[in-house]
Image (cartoon, rainbow, N blue to C red):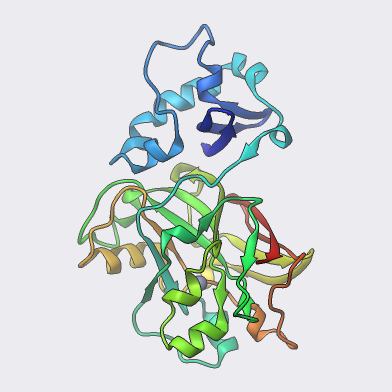
Length: 296
Ligand code: ZN
């Protein structure tokens, strides 16, 4: 399933994308073939409940498979899609693509490099990335976001993907000058609006292998990152096993799994974001996340 959060006059509402458009569940509830039951109003409520989406999966799928549902779907360009949900923790992984480590001139890490993006930075598709006035080196990073669906601690690599509810696109927007001057990364990665996410939460069953996904980033239509998640140094299952060894992962946590080569600082000349730019992160089978850039 492709789940999303539709922005309605009543607030964000749980919705799904099907071939004929977007189904907003709360608006489609009158459908005669639906059994009487309470659905969560929002994707936020579904995702952050332990195992919430998993419990709903069969029912939502049956609703979406109903041939009658097509006439309740709204064309996607008539729906405002918001950020899918506000994550609990956002775990970011540094230097996790072979091609990105090589362009930075570094050596391959021996274990995953974790850092945090504070969730106040999270924005949705179409929301502007606002450039703070005291940095001139704001960079894009296309990343696969892994959404945890069930609480877990100390899981094995073999079981790790069982705790994933789905995947989304992330842009790990980064102020390089802040990263340099601070020596660590939290401030440079967590400026307001530096966490574009979405537009969809694509459930795990639709992504059979998270290590085989073409991933790209373009600015104003020019493709600057063009890689594949198979180049991750530490695959998703290993990241979950590594993090959960000492940190409980909760439903609604997100792991942003690192970025491939082609970031702005490594372009010649460097290609930092400027007001008026349009940044697009695209992962085949997961979605296309587009955000304009503006000055503060
Ligand atoms: Zn990153």
